Amino acid sequence: MELAICTDVFSSLSVEDMLDKVKSLGIHAVEMTAGGWGSCAHAPAEKLLHDEKRLEEFRRLFEKKGIEIAALNCSGNQLSPGEMGERHTAGAYETAVLAGRLGVKKLVMMSGLPAGAPTDMTPNWITSTVSWPDYMPECVRYQWEDVAIPWWKKFVEHCEKQGIERIAIEEFPSQLVYNPATLWQLRDAVGPMIGMNMDPSHLIVMGADPIAGLRNLEGAVYHIHGKDARVERGLCDVNGLLETRAVTESSQRSWNYVAVGCGKDLQWWREFFSVARMTGYDGYVSLEMEDLTMSVMAGLETSIEALGQSISR
Image 1: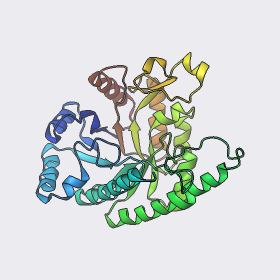
Image 2: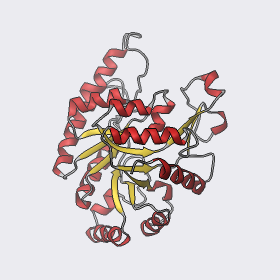
Image 3: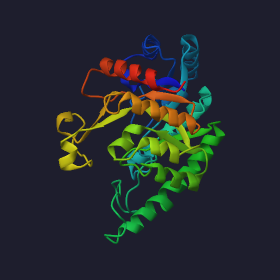
Image 4: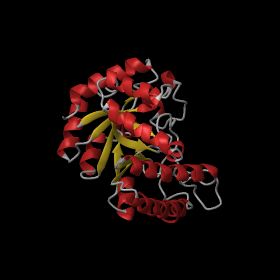
């Protein structure tokens, strides 16, 4: 395994300055947002695809700096009804074309989340039992069979034409794929191009065990995000793990995203990567810094040190 970094944390820097910053941290691979909700500060698919000279300069800059593109990320909600879904769908298709032009073989995405019915205009994340109320089964059937599976089958065909080999779906809360079971559901319906971007922080905050998740997903983990979370003692005991407060309200939340090693200890992370390697993963681990309890650089340095001591190389 090798360490990469998600570059949105350096969104204020130019591409060249970002690459220099990444190298100064001892990292030689990047994951960049090119569509969806990301800043797209360094790899805006639409702009690069409409300017051949700019695209060629972009490609040469990475060669010059000795930095590899581990993946392009276009995480968004392409299954949303209305303008958002249309915009994120267009961005996903453009990102796939850009990946093909750059020789990048992997996309990192989210599954998307449809509305609960054809006439609804707001995505609906159903987490309660479908046994009651009685409208739940039809909502879930509609989301999967009428929206998600057809969209993904068509998109996979597009990606195959661009030379993309793997699409790593991040198991994010409020998405249709949010755990191993729902990843398998999509993969079984669409095909083996679909795998998981294992982001342990999301399973942690839903009360699951990412290490057990790795074992369940043997052969289907296509990417890993180096990102930690801490379930806050006392607060979670009172209010549970369902949390709607803004991420900036760190002191009041039942859980928070934190620098690697500030949620789970190093022994846990060493076991996590050992099991990842044992079950077949030997790719990039992209550090994603979203800890609001410390400065960006403190979070990066803390995470890099912890990942350096735990990644199975």
